[in-house]
Length: 444
View 1 (spheres, rainbow, N blue to C red):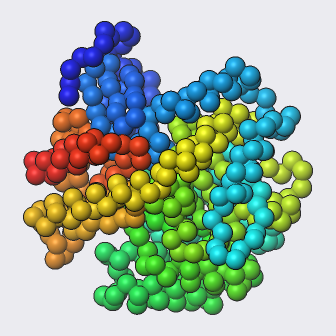
View 2: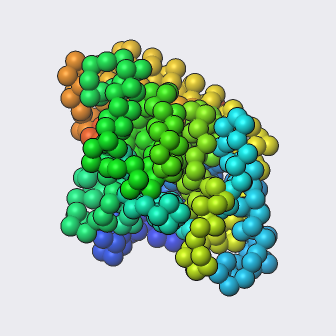
View 3: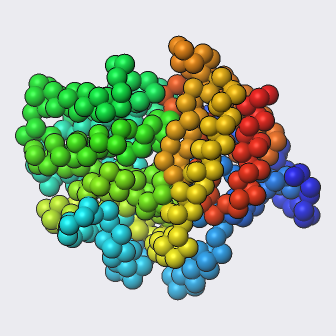
């Protein structure tokens, strides 16, 4: 696995790490010591030629893997035409065609004929910021409901909507934005009451309704923003009926339902969008990460009349909807549909779940295996009875895996979850190899 495959040029791994230490702030944390010189598919290579299997995929931004040849070709072709012109100055085909495609694949429930429009930004966090701006202006209301243990980004409003204080918000608590409230999100492995999943869903729905009856008047709430599966929160999957019930309450009170699909979208869960599992049509859909196949883009797509409530100049970005990112996104959607990538995600997820369940059967530090499609995770605990989190075991396992040629990333409220975001183009042999390394790294 560590054979040098080509003559190295440029700086060594140690030299690049020294430069990072000197010139890059510690606030930008890095999960592994690996330096990447090149990448392809599900593999990355360091300057010395060592190969790593990538089970992180740019934190879910590479559902089609590194350097997909068709995407690179589309980007190269666009580069030869023009690289940047700005959608606020002129109109160009990739921008409007991508908006058209997002309308076509928008997650509509059966019978829904909602027409959509889209606006593009440079990242998921920027898309969240725009979704909240649109929601507030279109409704004339100020309050936003988000959920505990959520993650929506690191810009100010997105950071405030994020439901995890440590790491994301702790250093900035005095300067978060106002009028965002957080309510409990159902976490079946760590429930707030010892009840079954159906009862847990009902309990959280009741807490939501109670908040609207007491400290938040529905007439003041512009929108609810929710991840169909919590990503940074540890791949927490809510009970099936929870999302549908919350959406119904939103409809009753004319509160907008914003689905944050930044990490779950573009076939990761076995559907184009995770909200499709619940049969809910969102008012606004936020996408990013794998939409651009490694090129920076964020999108807000939703009911046309919501966008039409905003006047000229209220939305915009110099680089938002960059032509390069738009053509990458167009080609991504084409490949996902043509190559039945959502079905592949389901198959990958089944393999991950089968292997993880088998590992958990003999490894008592695994408290739970969970996920949807190819969005699978394991939560490590010191004791299954108490469910005491074991972040130190996760840290050790990730380090051992990295030493053995596998890139992994942690997640979870207590940083005790190993999540897998494998490229959906990974081969069966690579998938098996990576799981074998993960299994051995859990054992020591």
